[in-house]
Image (cartoon, rainbow, N blue to C red; front, side, top):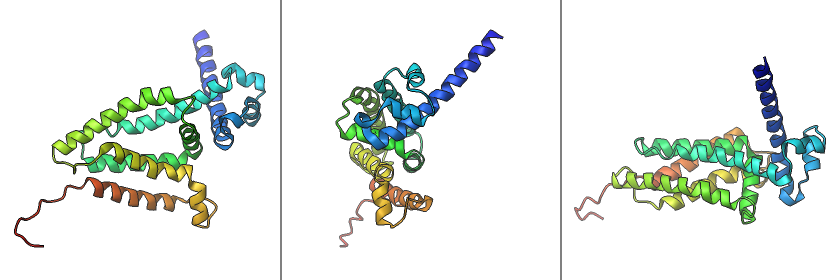
Length: 219
C-alpha cells in the first residue's frame, strides 16, 4: 500500500509539473525571460506563487526545464538522421516532416528556444553546445558515408542542416508574419502540407546524384 501511495504521488507531481511547464512555455514565448514572472506563470496555472516554487524554486529552474523539454524533442528528431543504412531520401523526408510537425504543434516551445538563441544563449548556451554539437557531428558523418557510397551528391551537410532548421522552424517562429502575408488569422494545416512538399523537394534536389556527362560532345 505505501508503494501505491508513493507511485500515485509521483504521478500527480509529474502531471502538475507538466501543467506548470505548459503555461510557462507560453509566458516565456510572449514575454521573454526577463519579462516573465513566477507569479504570472503561477496565476495562469491556477496555483499560488509559493505552491509553484515548491516544484520550481526559481524562474531560472523553470526556464531550464522548459528549454530541456524543447531540446529533448529536437534531439530525438535529429537521432533519426543518424541512420546510415536507410535511404537518405526517406530519412530526410521524415526529418522535414517531423520538424514541421513540431513547429505546427509546439509553436510556443519553438519560439522560446529561438528567443534564447537569438539573444546569444546566455542561460542555455552550455547545454546547446554539449548536447547539440556531438549529435550534429554524428549526423554529418552519416552524410559523409552517404556521399562516399554515392547515395547522395557531395553537399555541405552542416549548411544543409542549417537550411532545414531555418525553413522548418520559421513556420513557428515567424508564423504571425506568414499569416499576415496570407491574409488569415493563423496558418492552416494545408499551409504546413504545402511547405512540407516544397521543402522536401528542395532538400531532395540538393542531394540528388546527377548522372555524369555523356562525353559525346553534345551541348
